Length: 481
Image 1 (cartoon, rainbow, N blue to C red):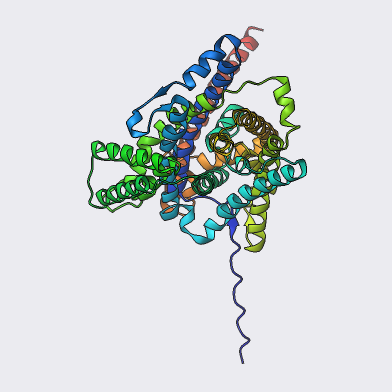
Image 2 (tube, rainbow, N blue to C red):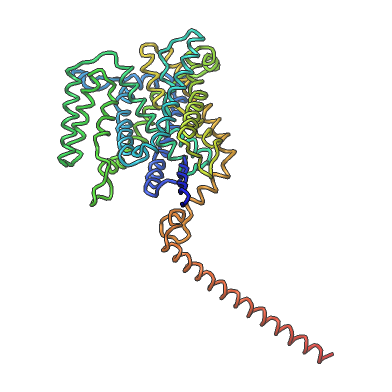
């Protein structure tokens, strides 16, 4: 009687493994735009701090930020600072909505097994900072109102830090950081919608819902033209603002409605096309202008010292630096542990810890939540902003040190990922299993070998000619002697 066949062991799933080629190209394009936007964001934040802290310019900063404009009859006579927070950030959240939709239907979040890691990491990366904030304030007798401030990651600012320090992360870690930020943005949106809506004007909210329904129907009917959607989007935004629900929610809702799957005759889906058009506007204009009018707080030695003596501000700093790092790293490790997945052979857990530290940079959404959490308390709002800046700077410095230690390894990995010896526009690492690739490489090696043989023959002929000349000269000298 034959022995029972032993079943083959199930393959071990790798976390942070190689991306598919389309996903790699999408991530590279998205991060390229975000990196440029992040550098502009960094410049805007520095400009705001200089503008607000140079004595002769301070009053002008306040005057410009508090200058009101807009139709009073529509309830939209807002300050410049308010327009930046509620209006321009709606563009940012519109792009975030498209990113989320794409991840859900065509990206990492489409596969539940692949989605577990970034979702759990993002949830832990928001829950632990909130817990750190709450524990700090319970122990110090502070306010719990700012619990959500350290929960957000600013992907653009994080990428700007990478650009400044000259570190190139492998594509798997970059994709993880991007997906983490998308999920992080989703939960930040939910926090804003649920916890920072004090009053609701149901008539305005109903109008916004009707407008969104019209927006959805026009998309489904295939209606095209910016002159249709832009005015409708402005109406939806205005109604959402007047409803009492934060106006940026309108941007997210419209982004989620776009189709992000391709038809056979389409090079890009409508969502991808619109994101490609709007992302530079978001990263290059909307977010930097928000930073310009939100990051300008007066900073002094006393103000920096107060950050570590007040439980609210200390909770924000510890939440960003300690909570974010431990939350994301712990969530990633637990996910790998309980799903029996192993880390990619090229990476170590130290790399995950460094990326988790980088995610502690919370700027744009953290500043927005800080303004909402302490609305009406200008002094505390400014102190929270200082805490966000200091916490983000500390997280950036920590991540810089950790990433620099491994930078040589990352450079080698990135070079391997981008090597294209057959010059066909596709990295060689994605063609290792295709016979055509090896045939092309064989032809390339044959040409190189033929060229080297020709050079070797020419050099040998030159040496032989020199030897003959030298030999003839020696014989002539011998005859003369």
